[in-house]
Image (cartoon, rainbow over all chains, first blue to last red; front, top):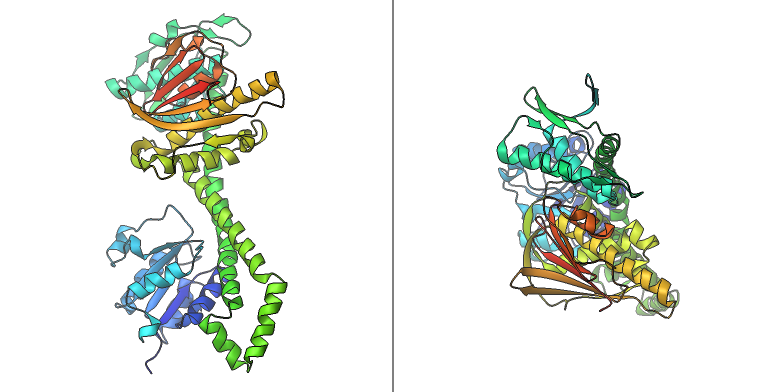
Length: 129
Length: 370
């Protein structure tokens, strides 16, 4: 059996981080969490992930900086921006890394299957693994 | 605020002038003095934009219009003067003892509005985080309670539970109405999410920009915000009034500035609802207030018609144009609406319509006809 698709959730809000992690474990993914960009980069020393779900307004390194740094270490990774700011739009920096509006998820998410559908659409369906 | 040799003065840069001009109308109920100030400010800005002037000698056209005071007296606005200081700054002399405090009040209100917008945005973000935890967790609870869910079944099987045990759990869950309560949390948090999104969308500070919107979606936003707006809730009891509206399936796209449209529509609804309250005072509690909204197009272009079964406004035919001419013949509600932005307003035997430049849509309010 092949290893599960892996997700790293980078989110400083405990309630959101943990419930999202539980959801994706239920969905059949291998999930890890980090509460900051710095913590995420430490985890990357040990392993890389297929998917990164990244909050934008993080303390310390912000989400955009975290994505830029991770992309350098893990160029094939797929990123989803997870933001509570309704005004957020993909910046030039993120667009140059291949992110589009399709990669943005606005909090709060009333139906978590919207996120898992997005992830599956990018080829990471746990049922096909 | 700077002091000149002779006159008190308000120093503004152009951006502040725009703010002072446009934003206060949202926050203040118009009275005649404020209208005069706003008209003056519009004239100034119009000149600055169209002629690229660096210095204007007051009076311009509006100054021939006297300011009408609330106590019935009239006051001739004293001449004002605006001059360039450096490249960016404008100095507006407002020597009139009535106009100047109002001008300062306008500025104060504009700054308050910007501050409130920022506070609302910050507070909404702080609410969104714990709300996200609630919204996501309740979905997990519902999923855990769903005994048909494959993951739930796996976990129960791993725990060594048999079908009979599952039946007991299902009965317990049903008797204690766990799913129902989870559903209530989910629905309530969904409403909070919608509320925050709508309020944030409206309070976002931006210069007017026309975009294509579906009329019904704009009405959704406007009616929702009207129902939570403080005055409409407390003074106008808007939620108690039945509102008929266009068929939800109707999809007509209009090009408007969303904030302006919503603001003008809320002001219009206030006028319509105010007439309902007036009718209730006259007719007693048997009177049932109602409002109907229709979207129409005719030779004059797109229009929203708001029909209220309230009391008509008792005014003769009158009108206001973009320069403010004729404004003193209109009731304060119509003025308030007109001065949200540059607008053409006409009042005809109790009904009035307004067409503002920013909304591009004529709004007609009819009374006694819902």
